[in-house]
Amino acid sequence: FKDILRSVESAKDDIKHAPRFRSLGYKVPRPWHNFCDSGLRASPNHDVTKRIVDRARFLKFYYDYDDDDASGSSGELYIIYEFIGDAFLPQLVRRIVGTAVGMVNGWLPEDFMNLSLSNAV
Image (cartoon, helix red, strand yellow):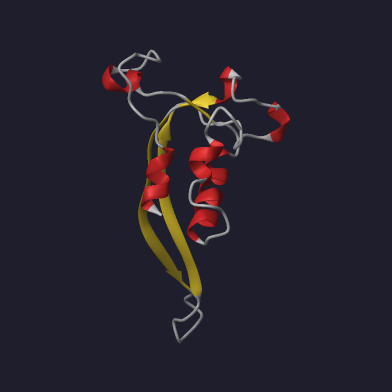
């Protein structure tokens, strides 16, 4: 799961792509057209969909126990993620996490993330 989240991060390049501080300016914007809201009618060449994700990582599991249950078996499990980037599109992080869950469970192919972030699709 960690490897899938790391594949979301933007790669570094020798050319400065954005007016960002120091080495962050050398990260390559990626087309997120397959992950954005359908109301944008986006394509891979549409600059609105190109964003930089500096960091995508799993932080921790958090289990919230139900105080009313004496056995301690009920409660909610939460997974805490951290996404750092510039100007995320609406619903982008939710769709990235949903795609990662689908890949981990085998519902989507292993190369789905890289394929969906290519300009050809």
